[in-house]
Image (tube, rainbow, N blue to C red; front, side, top):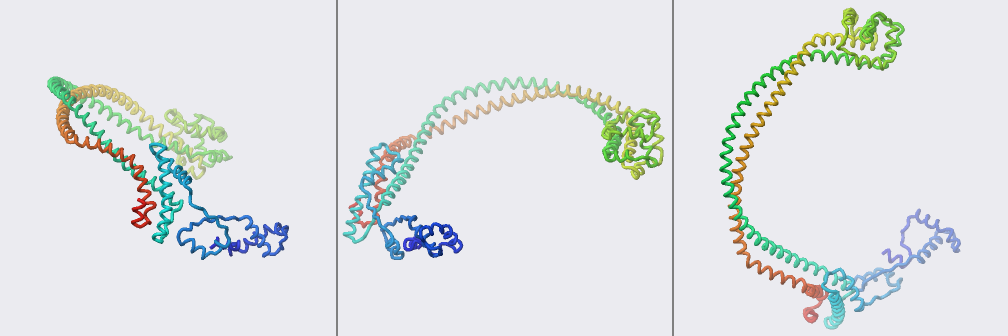
Length: 506
């Protein structure tokens, strides 16, 4: 419908919306005025249509075969009244041959001469059908049309049919050749099996003799190994008792040492609570709250080993560099605190006001420092009590390690002896398994040889028949080139004709 409107009027109704039409006429306004058209919507649109007619060209292709072209011509008269018609006639023989050669170029054929003959024959078929169509119309008053498309369909169908048939033939040849190869391999296998069976039977006798000798050797050495293992086991039991006793003593010492671990954690936690803001706030006090001076004195005693100058100014000097001060507390040697310092600390700690919760109400920094001094002193006392136990534990550990090394030597000796016994047993088991394996192999070879001989005898006739089939299929692969051509021609052209015409064309 749209094509008919363009051919008849040059325009498709309602092609543009009103806003789009205004945009189109606006773009050509200056050009239309220059061409002498009025500045009105209808005039501008007429100029647009004329310009489209000058620049728009259409080529329409129709086949006259069938009713479709007649129906369209009646429904859309613009196809006839507004067009110029060119009629394309049938392809000449030279064109048909050239097209066939072009499309058959990718088909595998024995020679190019054969390709030319096939192309000639295809053109002969197509042209002969034209004559048959005319005779058919005269005799039967029925139309049959052949067009260049029919010729192209012939070529395509021939290529597809040839490829399909050749593929089936090649598959059959491949399967038969594979079967022949397998038969040939079976014949070789049978010959090799006979040789292998003779050699295997010799090995069977040798393995029987070697296994008998090895059994005697294994029995004698296994008895010696059992005696050595009993002696080594006694040494292992004695060493285990000594090592267990040393381990128990070390565990007891470590149990006592674990009492000091929470005190260390408490001191570390107190220092971790300190930060630069807390130290700076603490240093900003001009006068210390009541009782806080005990904290500064305790820190001066422990950290600086101060004996006399416990003033607030001296304490602030100690905290002059907060980072260094906090690091000194973290790395403080808690194990080695002098006795005179501990005595001074006992006096401070015995004061009822020297408590973390009391100091926490006065200063966060003072509370953390109080907690640190209490934890350090507690840890030091526990450590000095536990130190002898620790030394005893180390001594016990050294004893245990020594015994464990001795035990290791004994265990290695036992392991070597056990390995020797197991190796001898493995040798015996391996020899017996090898003997059984060789015997089973000989039996299997004998059975396989018998089956193979029966198979070869039964397939002898098949071998001959398959070779003949391969030759026949090889010939069929060549003759299929012509057979497919005859079949393709029949399917492509002869179908519409009556029986009498088919026999004549055939």
